[in-house]
Amino acid sequence: MINVVRTKRIIRQTHSINNNNNNNNNIKYMLTKILGNNNNNAYNNDNHGINNQSISFYTTTSMFYAYQKKKGKAERAINRGKSKFKMAFSTAATNIHSPDVSGQWKNKIIKMMKKYDETSEKEILDTITQDDCKLYKISKLSTANDTVKEFERMKKQGIIPSLLTYSILINKLGKASQFWAMEQYVEEMFVKDIKPNLFMYNTFIYLYGTKRRSFKKVNMYRKQMRENGVKPNLVTYNILINVFGYYKKDLRAVDRLYKQMKQDKSKAIKPDLTTYNTLFKIYNGKSNDNYRQCMYYLKNMKRDGIGPDITTYNTLLQIYGLHRRDLEKVEECVEEMDENGISKDLFTYSTLINIYGNVARDFQRIDILLATMKAEGLKLDVTLCNTLLNLYGFQKYFYKTEIIVEKMNELGIEKDVGTYNTLFHLYGHRRDFKAVELYMEEMKKNEVKKDLRSYATLINVYGSIEKDFDMVEDYITEMIENNMTPNTFVYNTLIKVYMYANNHVAVNSILEQMDVNNVPKTQSTFNTLISACAHSQDFDKAEFYFNEMKFSKTLQPDLSSYNTMIKVFTNAQKYDKADFYYSEMVESGIRPNRFTRDILNTRKRKGRLIEKWN
Image (tube, rainbow, N blue to C red; front, side, top):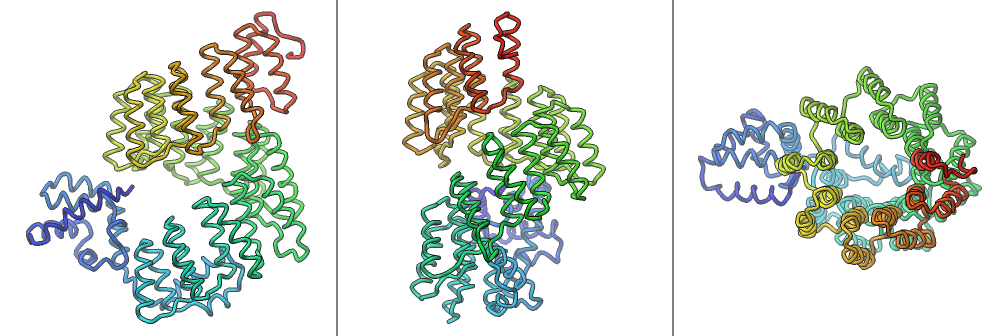
């Protein structure tokens, strides 16, 4: 990971000694040693489309240590970042301003436009100029700022930007989340009376819907499309379904869009594989209604004659295995994949390992899956390693977690923030705080930045386990200093920590802060509150939070909520209340799980199991 602030500081320190020829020679010697004499000119070239931010941190660090004559540290930095070093300078060596003789960049522009538009390749090809190719090349090989500089340079040379030229620039700025700059160029385009086409509108909807989550802007551009007579295409509908379903969670809007697609007489916007894959991602089967809707779309897909691909099967495996815990359906899905000749990828194996570990607790099956994966030539990656660490750690197979960490070091798999978060959690729950501190030092050394989950995990470790509330406050302060706004997960962790410490003043303050910061309360928030109240035997407060969730417009109690309430009143020997919540759970269509059965067995042993629970 590139630490931009520290990189800039080291670069400034390195370049501040330009007058000292000996030191410069030391740096050049290091570059020559790693890249060879032929590549030495890459460093001396004037950027050529690669700026300071795009240089690997390890590269800059090795240069800085070379200047300080710290050979050992320089070589260690080189070894850690050698591949990144070569990649950065090979990009720099590319002459970014060369003409597109082979037509490579024209083809890439066509590919980009085909994502958002269904215009024929010939029509797109007629609009592309060499200047557009040059701008697109810079947008791909360099930063958004460099793309803006090239765009301004074109204007100074008297080159009139076309709609395509603006599209390339706006696309780059939006993906870099520089919306303030993007909006300036959109205004400039309208001032010049350059009207957006379908490609531009689809780009606007995608960027504002998925990157900025500004649904008002999405609706504004939809209205503008209608006013300018620009008809939406299949790509528009697929983007809108993704935006309103996955990001806004507006399932009614998704249903309306799907019906419009099915009712279109021209069949120009008939649902395709992308449509159905997006719908399966949205209706993920976590609730009974979602699962029924998901199966409805699966039947429609088969009725439309659309065959599933690897993405479809991976999503369905998650739905059947992780969300519905239906192992028979998982087996059927895997058999169907084999029958259709669709090879499993790393994500498939990761999902299956997660299912057989978390749901079936079948670790022999996991060993078979890992052996099959190895036989098929698929190598471990950091995501799969993180999955295995979570599974083995949850089962307290700590010797296996240590084997996974050793394997990662042996294969050169770099730990990401998810790996460190898992290790913090594992060693924290073992009360091995020295190991937590060692991994924090390693994380800092490898320039891996903490994310919100890191802070939530550390707050949980030091708050719930160590009861060190000074450390909790330190992490909250560090998070704020790093300009990170707490999300629902962080707030839920803080609620858990302070609820179990019986600090109700702090909990009420956190809940108020959530409302002030417009952070939504989730099922997990209420389940945490209910569970903590149960722990302190405050049954009235537990019922209060349960009913608040039950009668809210957006949330409903889930299996975890009902299990907690049944357990609370069973342990308190208030069996009428426990029976009431069990009956309500069954009537709402929520199936009991193993945890529910454990509670029932407890009552059975006490001879107080009512007839309908048998």
